[in-house]
Length: 244
Ligand SMILES: Nc1ncnc2c1ncn2[C@@H]1O[C@H](COP(=O)(O)OP(=O)(O)O)[C@@H](O)[C@H]1O
Ligand SMILES: [Mg+2]
Image 1 (tube, rainbow, N blue to C red):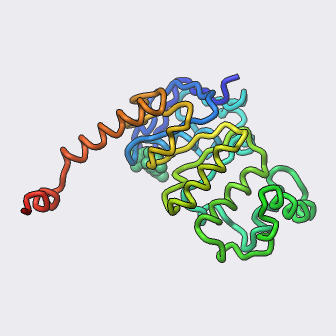
Image 2 (tube, protein in one colour; image 1 turned 30 degrees about the horizontal axis):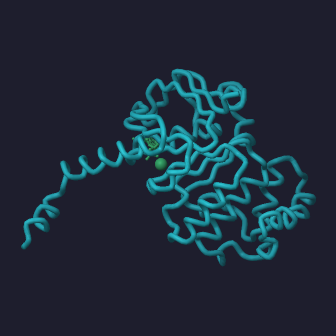
Image 3 (cartoon, rainbow, N blue to C red; image 1 turned 180 degrees about the horizontal axis):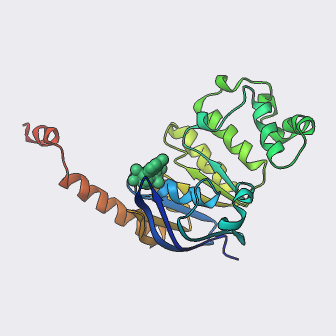
């Protein structure tokens, strides 16, 4: 079964067309989404878990139509945002994980009890009582991933997860992503991360400009981006270049 299916999906935000009549079948286990700022990447993945609703067309996730079952989508599609501080609500790690367990149906008291074993599954039971603010950026990101995974979603979406991570933490996160049994859809500007992916889509102005194997799509996007940058070089850059 195709995990995510879009038929003629158009999305408008602030009166502008942000996604333009998209037809997509997303079935591969590892899918990358690339494109310039404002090309519609975040808007697209927000359709998958009901954070945004299409103005036209239909989004279907594991057989659930977004137009009919939007409230059930967050349980199918787990979302990890760029900034962990936008995701984390509670003061301690255990409370944050307990909240996720509550979202997936456990009563509050049981959820609090189940939080430590859930953390143990990821080798982080010793984090349980830690205040979230005492975690490093990478640790917070990892907590967000744990909080999403305990809900056992069918699809995991990561929207620019690497942008505030140092290279070591980033490689660890990539390693963790590689072990996930779920379908993973990752938005990133760190293009080398996609070399192990099954498929990469390049979004441009709300349309798919190229869709295929990572080498091909990333290469074409890189060439295009470099050409754009050269064309739109700022006056200051020209001055710098002219220096002996
Ligand atoms: N809250 C919003 N209200 C109105 N327009 C928005 C909002 N968020 C994003 N947009 C617009 O939607 C377009 C796509 O944005 P986005 O999906 O965030 O792109 P990307 O993730 O590729 O940078 C942009 O033109 C952006 O200005
Ligand atoms: Mg974005």
